[in-house]
Length: 185
Image (cartoon, rainbow, N blue to C red):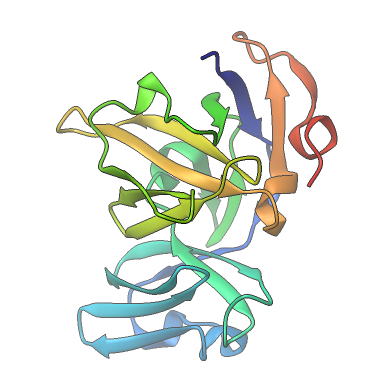
């Protein structure tokens, strides 16, 4: 199975916020990001609820698939894929490997904790929870390698707004076209 190179559209503002205390939560996200105690956050996400520590960068987007109306997640690769200027986050054009979710998972994910579900979907365990995607409706995305040597990866669902933020490119980063136009939902 072959893979595709992708990157996020660079220098665009990223809907993200660093949460170190309750005062860092924007008013419109207070129903989506909550403190469980002084060191734990609860994020409302399309996969359910995600528990994480304070001090992380949290991405967000509007979503009809959550009770709060926002999908929130930890951007575990914020240090390499985002730049922060005066508290505002912008996307870098980091080249990533991606492959459409199918009946098998890609070899570049060997070592990741992945399961094939009874409904035909796949789930990958990430540092911040689990992501699930269905064949033809999502992409596996490899962001890099963690310190322990396992893949830093996630699933990109074609129905979420962030799907429109990816550009297909060649190995050298030369743009080919928007992923959402090459593979529409």
